[in-house]
Length: 290
Image (tube, rainbow, N blue to C red; front, side, top):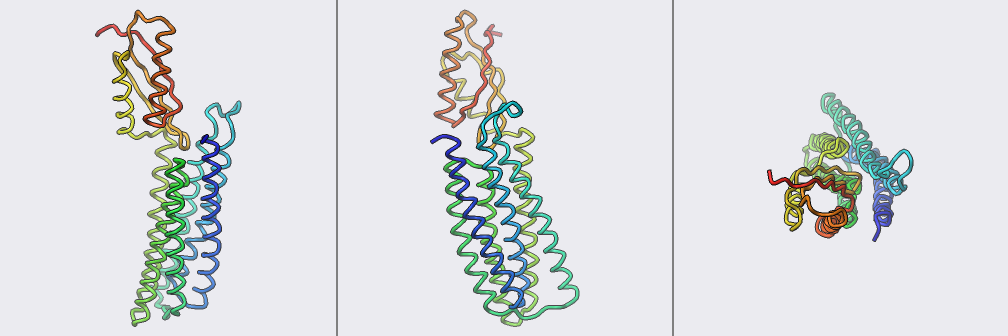
């Protein structure tokens, strides 16, 4: 399956998230309004940001499918990462707003007992989002999509948020009215924490960060090739779900151009088969024995 086909599959996961979040956010906000639940209201606001974040992921996946052009010689794969970063900014702004609103209600003491319908709504939402998470997590792993992986993690946190809202509302039924707004406060902190995790991963990729352990594994694999005398240098960067590797190897100086080229072809096949790396720039230098 080609990279473009994988990205197209990833769009399916984004669409599922969008529809799920649209239905859940509208349902939660309406029921929370009439059922007097701060926790469910915060959960509904959380889902409304997820709609925007999922749309950002969908746009990122669509742009990533565009081929290389005069302005983007390496393709548009990083659009996925930019989409994840955009989603993080939206999430943290809403998370801060939820925390602020809930703290105001706690300070003013305007707390009411929520209706039980809000509890069952939160529980049903948790079950639905766990299902969406499992689907998107499996798809993200299969197609190696960072933005869809970020969306899947968000799906999981949303399921846990709804579960927390359910517990808070149930506690309020037994006279612990403060549990409902406290659950809403926790929702706000979870939104901010999820946003931070996505922001950290996205900025690491956009600043050409690369997994050191993976780079070491790749270096060891290349070093085992018989014709390679030494791996002088190796660097890596990420474009969407694609790894770009720059390698400098030392070989026998008596080899001709064709023999040297055959070594690079062998290494390229090795990287593709063993490490799923399909973009490698290999520079050959003579080995002097020093």
